[in-house]
Image (cartoon, rainbow, N blue to C red; front, side, top):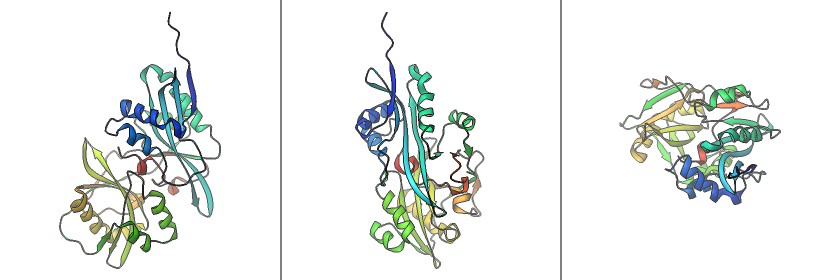
Length: 286
């Protein structure tokens, strides 16, 4: 009888990323090449952690991965340590070991854990482990084609000049992030820094998701110009806007009936303080 290979659990090191990239390309999302997967799991900001999550190997082959993005953020004058749970994929024959990855991730002390794009089957697992849902209620907004006053800055050097210290650091940290797009919108005497990503719905890459706005009140004044920029410059027809990030929706928005969940676990940060920066949403361009 052939022996059953031993499945070993260990940290996902930078040296493992080529193997992990090939694994995720083959078994999670083939729209990203193996190289894209490997590169996207490297954070573009400085971090003290040397690992990128955890992985399972059997006879030397990768059979499971749980990626992570670590960061340190200033929240209300204190330093908060975050661990963002990213791509979780385990081969069918090794699913019994999948929870070992999750337990290893959550056993790390001193972190606030976020899971910002959990699949439907992961949500109840997270809830049993103490995660709570963020308020992701929001709207689908169609981008109107007529002219809106103001201007949009996209050149990184010009963006840096216009931002305050905190937002300059956010921009520097995410300038090379593969999924993040950056603009500063100036209109009607208001200015707002916006980070967004292109997303797919029903296989169509016609949507943008707003990940961060520097000033929700100012965003309301510049949003029309921003959406026109998305339409004409990027061919993006719709935005998915969360009320807690972008404020009240415009008159022609349609409320989301089933907003995608996002979750957080940890006493260090309140749910209202959690945003989508320093995460897989800025780094992985699926």
